[in-house]
Image 1: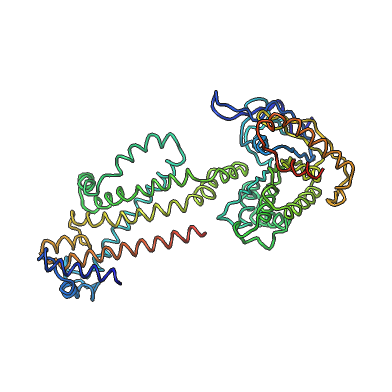
Image 2: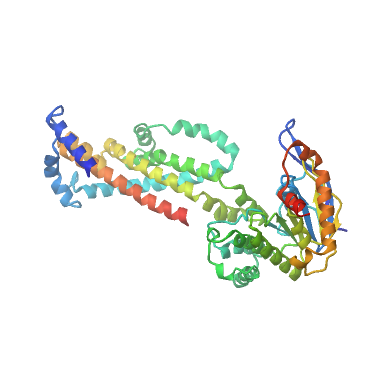
Length: 277
Length: 244
């Protein structure tokens, strides 16, 4: 049985009459320890999908199972990293992480909680910035804090909601490597939501494309059978990389046909990749 | 400097032309001098230095203001957190808010049969509204992001309140506190006049009745300067909390 399972999940917003269906009949099975990337257009409902898995939203149809039990709300078995970092500005880096640790491990003695906090800050290479506040940090550093906070809860699943899309290309590349490094270390189950196909291929075991909305649904899984650790320079010349990218983009373009006919909106990731190809 | 000179000029001209009983600036200074030079002197129950009187007023204001914050802040939180509580209570607040301190004081006297608690009651009930309303607005303005963090971290209700809601609302609360203090200081004068309690407002009213008009001006200046100082002080505290 799959560890994280979506069964016919649907979600819409708005009052009856003016209602838009965002996600329709999603099915997905994720094994324990698997790194899955869900790639889709901006505005396709990726964040909605992640909020459903996090338990911040309730599905209108279907159910989400984690370890066989239905997800009814947020839980400390799932760590979430938000696109906009969502750090608390009145707390230092250390306090932000400590808040999660205190809540997750109330029975630990203070000394152990402090060590656990420090260890996770060190894990994302921020030991030197421990006492700084979020506004003193760059976007990349803030997102590292957010990753440290999510990991410090020692969740069974890590949910990443476009964690790198607000960052510049160089910072983005560095953080991708760090995410890969951390994942190699403890092999948690990870769901990465992204609009960057290359990012998905670089990091994930499997890519699941999300078709363009409204009423988006998940496409067929595409395995990434490229050995780790993956080198971002070498991977560009790997024929398997090109093949996976072609399949993901073809699916997305085909699925987005309706939406694209209605307007000129093209997801930036898909557009740049198209240009390169 | 130019502004002050203009006011002094208008004051002297007024005293000489259309308002013969208005004392001139120099006369005012002469008569007020003992009260200013020895600001803490106590010569009799109603004959004390201005700062001594002001101190009595400040103590009363501090008590009433503390009461206003103690009631107003939690009330504001409840209003901000619960839409249904807000719907049922907001109309009452909108009706009570514009009521003048002069109207509350007699009710306070009826309720407590004593001028001191009545004064506290009046200050508190007049001064608390900015705190209540600003806190409520602040709580409603807490970004959804922070609330999502509270949810995904599974924060307990207590941690949610103390680690997220209160820090996020603090800047709004302090704006409310500052406005409330301004009102509390306005109300004290009216309250002292009506109850005859010793204090800067009581002194003002007594000197009016004794026809020592110079002291009225002295009192007005003192009240203004202290109000200004209080606002500056709160402004500093406010900025400190916003920076934090």
